[in-house]
Length: 291
Figure 1: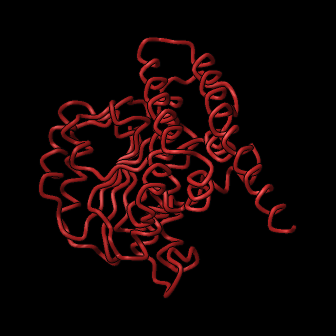
Figure 2: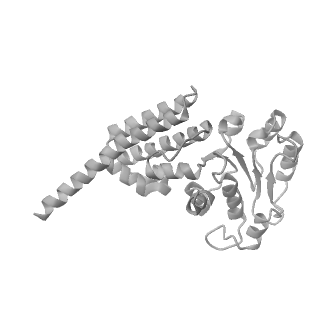
Figure 3: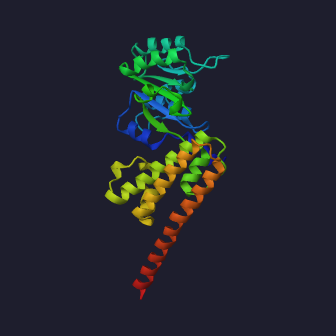
């Protein structure tokens, strides 16, 4: 993996940056995605951003608060995960989280609890935590990190603002619109397909109403505009339905390589042909205009 891919993973998603800029921070987040997709880094950056002492471009990464969070010694930022030798987050750990959450921030603007591997909470811990999520304390942010939302109680998921993360290979696949490699991890493939579904839905939506504010992936506006110009509504509708079908195949134990091959061929066939047609039309128009 190149340094560029690592940089892309470590940056916060645009939707988080936008929330920080507008001071629209939710009380509970759920970061989902495969290992190596930058979930913990983004959670740490969010904790730094809400408590940053800098004036602009938060998190600044150099103020006293940011440095304390980097060193995991900030009195208002807590990192929670299974203890050494234990495979799950137990009720005692969650009780400690709840107790600390009900206290006022000691020196920061907000208390932040980063619960890594939140999917490992046992049923007693999950139920106890759910009660806190129903009425979260003021000036407190919970960030749950999990490979998949399906590994958590649906009642917990419903109370979280969910943000998806993807691996460096997935980023390359999304950017190029083609097969970037083999996906032995079914859950990672499923998450990547869900990204593509939402991405092509954004393209479809932009093509119809041209409203940038309604898009989920506003950080990819340039690509969305390009694809909206290249693809017809019918082609976009076909691709979205095909992606939804491919995603359903994962639950029926279809070989991930087969799914990726079909996906690559469909995108190449639909998006590729439209791209050539668009260039041909543009070339014809320029030629006609030069006469």
